[in-house]
Image (cartoon, rainbow, N blue to C red):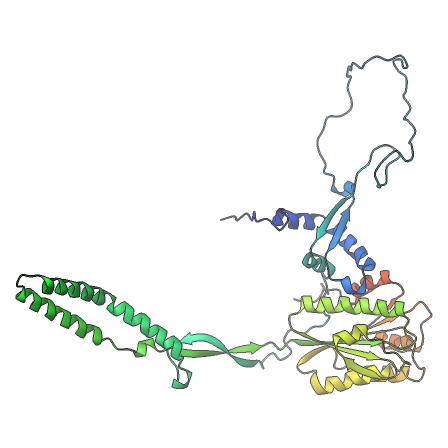
Length: 425
């Protein structure tokens, strides 16, 4: 067995392997710091790295050392103030004498916390560890796989329409050089010898005839090498590549009505940024559809979803209606894993909430893999929450969660998308 030891250094001249070992060892403390850091960040800087603080006591190692027992003789310099056995009082702490800005201990000693930086990738890996899209079917069409034709290098056989002229000529040149290089070298030597004999004053008729005959034979052999041969031909090769059938789409439905104040919208945006980072980092191919709504719903791009200032009244069913229309046009349930996350403060017209329940139960949930509703409010729940609560009581792939403050965002997010470790392999 061969063991490889990776001694490469990262950008700050520290061992990458030791760094990874350190993160694994103190993962619990690091994850706790990461969860606390997400609440302090602004909406636009969620995905950068982070400085992690670990208390010194958590880093201490158990060591063997000599005990304090036994009898020891020590010699101290004499003084005229104390006698043997006197207890010396600790000098009183003087304010303003120290030059530092840290928190000093009243006992005169203490330990600084250990602070180190983790990269963006390390931060996001810890942030989204043990999370997944619930109920994702990796291959919905078990026996029907779509393929697309892609270029796959070159081959020696094929149809005439696929001949690559440049590649074929390159092969021809290489073949002719390989087959005639030794003859051309010999031909050059013979021609030099012939020129020397001709220039000589003495008569070398026989030698000249012999060299001329050899030169003619070599030229004949070189000329017989074909310019291009069937061996040189190269054809463009094409293969079929399977198209994955486990395609997924996430619908992001955000309430931007007048009842959503700036603080509530900020919490909703933080949640959706976390969701976007999680999706794009965990899954290679996934579509994200952004829908903003007040009395009317509109499909928007990422920029408008997070930064538009448009507002109005509240009709939550408009967003669900638009989602159904988009599903019918672009995302058929037979080929797509459909997910949705709706965020609102729960303020809705009383007669519109039953309409939302109807749309969910009849048109969305039968086709969706998972639907999550997040209500951001500190007030009592209203009719929309009550209608959704009835759905959650009998629907496993429908989840509702309540967010009051920024500190609730990440715990709620993990609860909605936690990995199911009990499912069958």
